[in-house]
Structures are given as C-alpha cells and as structure tokens.
Length: 116
Image (tube, rainbow, N blue to C red):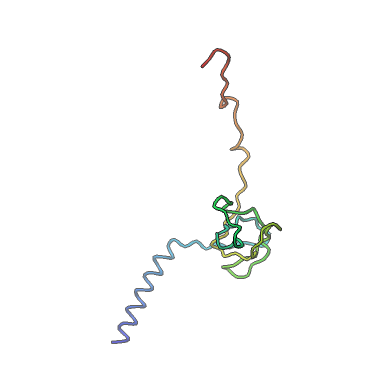
C-alpha cells in the first residue's frame, strides 16, 4: 500500500515537473558580458527604496560565475547592496538600435504660418 502511494506521488511530481520545465529558460552568462539586473525592493537598504526608483540597473558586467544559478556583477559604487544576483534577476543587455531612434524630417510637425 505504501509503495503504491509513493509511486503515485512520484508519477504526479514528474508530470508537474514536465509541465513546469516547458516554460523554463536556462540562461548562462560569461564573465565580462553586459547584463541588466533587476533591483527588487528587498535589495535596497532600509529606508532608501522608492516606488519611483528604477526597476532595472545596468548595463553592468558579470565579474564571475558562482554557479549556474548565481552570478557576481560589477555594481556602481553608489549602489549599497550585495553584488551577487540570482539568474532570475539577470537579463541580457541589448544596446538600443541607433537606426531606430532617428527621426525623418517628414515625421516632424512642419506647420507654416497661417495654418491651424
């Protein structure tokens, strides 16, 4: 009876794991790579968190890898928190595309005198 319950629980847990692993993304970063780090409310020193403070900080470079799940990053000197981050709080940095930010002269408002 107990073996039957254990095998049923194991089968149930395996099916839950398969369903969860479908959406899981395995991310690894190399030292020197530029990333953005998410600054959660808990990471700020007491009394310094503001709702208007930036959610992400960066780009910052990866110093070294502790494990597949934890990395040490180079934080700016004004950030007073631990430099070790979980991989869930790290995202790759994608520099802005310079071509996408240019404005054509045809896109600007060129109202002449006498027009409303």
